[in-house]
Image 1: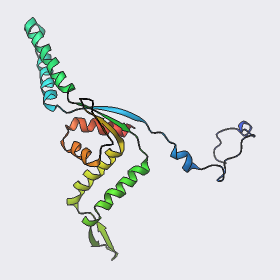
Image 2 (image 1 turned 90 degrees about the vertical axis):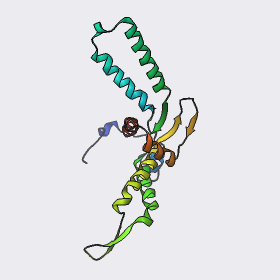
Image 3 (image 1 turned 60 degrees about the vertical axis):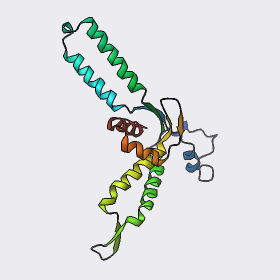
Image 4 (image 1 turned 60 degrees about the horizontal axis):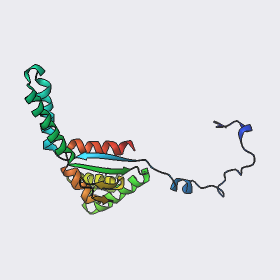
Length: 193
């Protein structure tokens, strides 16, 4: 025997051994709990840009050159921009999924592009089907949306309204339009699950 987790004396003789008749990994794996998390996504890119520029201005100005009124005005502007950014916050409630779900989603995406595939004769004379490069961007968009839909359980809007189980179309639009930094934040959080 290659590896032994417990010395033979530590095995409880009173417990029935695991056999195909008394144990099923299928049943065990059905009960796997995947991690959940929340990701805050901010969509007011203009206010975020203005805030970044304001911080650069503040950081680049020697403090002795700022009057008390200047400081108060800058702080008010920082607070205004932060409030505008906070008002654009959406909370994505995400969950991990199994690898076989991702495989099934890839199969589903491929099936939706079956009619787009072209035939070509391979070097060995057999006919092969392939997806033209012009369709890969659409396939990737669909696959990304399906994977996101599997991970995103809810989206909570700034006003508290909740979208439960957003569909692939909603998430594809999000990925098309959301600021790049926020899309990456969501994708990275999902990858960590």
